[in-house]
Picture (cartoon, one colour):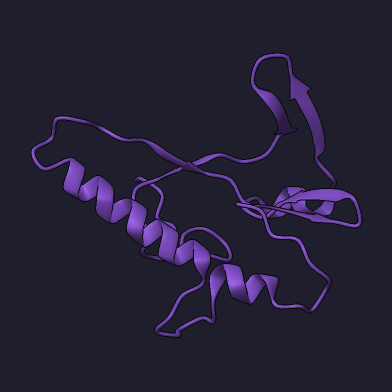
Length: 113
């Protein structure tokens, strides 16, 4: 998912919603729907799913990993793989099992124990 607009235009609100609000933004709604579908598909457990999440910000042409506070101080590099295409070198990828809790900064994704 990608969001692009001027500073202060409401991108974060659109993507995440307000903390504690009944209506979440696009990301919480998408995650709720995704994990609900996985739950339905896994009854009976014929399939298994692995969901991984990355969360980044591009600001002033600098890429920052929002899931790793240590890397927000430095810019990550965008590279291109010959087969897979563009990727961000060093960007966190967290395996998640639900959208409940608060173990991931700026969101409510729950990582497996």
